[in-house]
Image (cartoon, rainbow, N blue to C red; front, side):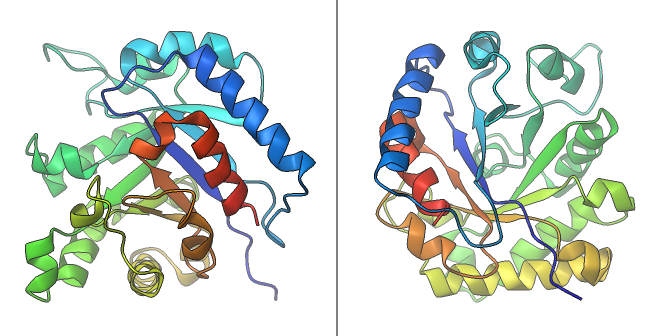
Length: 266
């Protein structure tokens, strides 16, 4: 039996920045066209990368309008509440995000966990909400520098993963994606060594096999996030369990992001 083919996903997290969606897409398209003209190749057996852009909520309608009916770029929300509606001032529900064009949602990004105090329990509720409303989650997990230096990196990451994703249904696991983002590498210019990323991704896949099945775990894309740039994307993507990239600051430059997408497809 041949190994399952996992989707290659490259995600752009614009965070609290506001590029013009139309201008960003136009520049991205020009850069992607130039990459194709120069003979950029697609990773053997994986197909072209699936691109997902996560703008701030206020830009989702404009991004959806700029995207039109194209199928090569999808949209996602950076966060959500686990309830569909209610007295939650300042929050946005999954159905609200979907109404404005989101088809993906980031769950448990490190900035949500470490700045806004989200817990494994709230992440589990958000993950369940995203799946129950038919959208696709990218569950983010990762350790701090102190946790890594204390030798607890794997324990922290696998605990975050299993507390959120344990007990899902078969089809829910098939809509799940995971992003390993070591907190110490986000926005710092430091990147996990490709072999370190591979080791953690392989451990995460093993853990997914234990809470789901090894067959389902083999289908779940696991992305790497943390100071991803055009000059390190290809080396990270060369590792067998690195199925994509979650790009933060570098995604604000559409031409640079296009180069990352091209590298992920080689």
